[in-house]
Image (cartoon, rainbow, N blue to C red; front, side, top):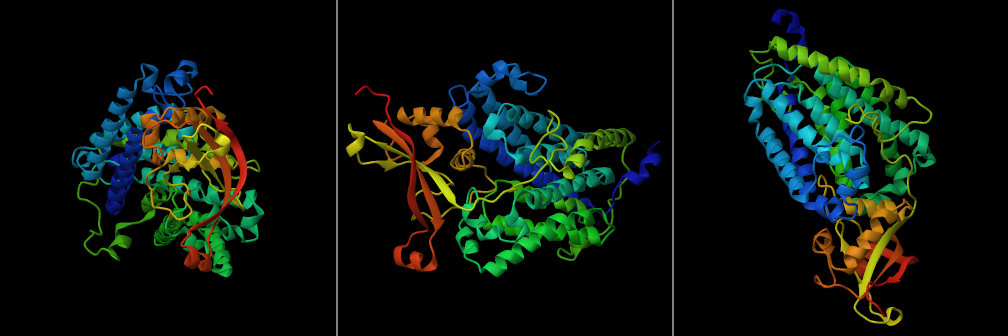
Amino acid sequence: MQGWFGWLGAGGYEFSRQVLQRGIAAIFVIAFLCAVAQFPALLGEHGLLPAPKFLARAPRRSYPSLFHWRYSDNLLLVVAWTGAVLAFALVLGLPQAGPPWVPLVVFLFIWAMYLSIVSIGQTFYGFGWESLLLESGFIAAFLGSDSVAPPVTILWLLRWLVFRLEFGAGMIKIRGDTAWRDLTALYYHHQTQPMPNPLSRYFHHLPKPLHRFEVVGNHFAQLIVPFFLFAPQPLANIAAAIIVLTQAWLVLSGNFAWLNVLTMLLAFSAISNDAVRLVIPAVPAGAVESAQLPAWFAVVVLAATAWLIVLSYKPLRNLFSRHQLMNASFNRWHLVNAYGAFGSITRERHEVVVEGTDDDDPAQARWREYEFRGKPGDPQRRPRQYAPYHLRLGWMLWFMALGSPSDHWFVPLLGKLLVADRRTLKLLRSDPFDGTAPRWIRVRLFSYRFSTRVERKATGLEWIREPAAILVAPVSLRRS
């Protein structure tokens, strides 16, 4: 029977498998560490959106999670640390040194643990790259171990994932905003993106003709190049290289959690050993000697392939729908999803600024500002690089400034600040009251723009900001 599956081994893609398995596992490490650092404060027993309350009303069938059995912050930390350790073992290549079932089991285990977290993560885990990581990890489970050649159908499923990710994002842009169609989107995007990085200001001040060229390049990379992932070599190599380079450009210009890095890793599913040898001559050109897949493993791979092909129907139809969904999951397992980003471009930047005071009279008070990690605050502070780490609270504050519903988590956030909740304060960059509770808190909205070169030289400011509105008038927990 083993001879029947000789065609299934994709000899010559062993280097790509190493990049895929170890790279995806590395992103899982980061994701689990994010959960360790942020989940208890955001979603824990005493968090902004307590997971136990959500679990009490969430249908088990719709939200698969081991936490339906029992939730506690300690159990959450056990799950997250266990996932991080197992994922790190994959980064080191330890499970891959054994038979194919070992990395299969380990990848499926960390996928199930992270799915358990995402399923109860509510709005704080409602990002497209959560589904992207889950889908990537599930497919990577079937790439095999070092003793066999990577299955060709799994490599093609990973290319299909990259296609949906890139082409879906391109179609969302074309359909969604005239700025993408008239090539002016990057006049604004580097300044108004959710979380700028240290180079975003320089990208924003590039000449406008170059911005227009960037948009043309984006359309080419997302609407045309993905089709060549399925072409014979060397066209698939070239397509993958273009995707890697364009994603690297995005890494340089902004903080998008692990979206860009993971996309670059997934593009390696189309890069052969021969192509890698042009850059790294030490990489072997041929297939591993024991390229034959065991019959049991081949059957498992083909069953998984068939299932994922069946699940592809709705995402495929969505790509060409006039009402295309962005970052949507069509099943509770977060497999074969729809992706996309920035279907509309914000022309002006607004930031939510939370301030507190010790003074008794808020009308005459000296207000001090809470600083959040990642999001702009102090106009003198240059944005930092955080990606591929994901600062969930900073992203939610960006959505709030755009007008997204936020009372369900933002009002509890203010309550936590008014009592100087220790876990919540750890999510912040700085607490102006050094761990003590303020008397009053208020929330203001400011307009922000990058300083010009002349303004930066004269004032040292990264940002120029102006008050725009009062979002929350002074509130207090103490009696007057």
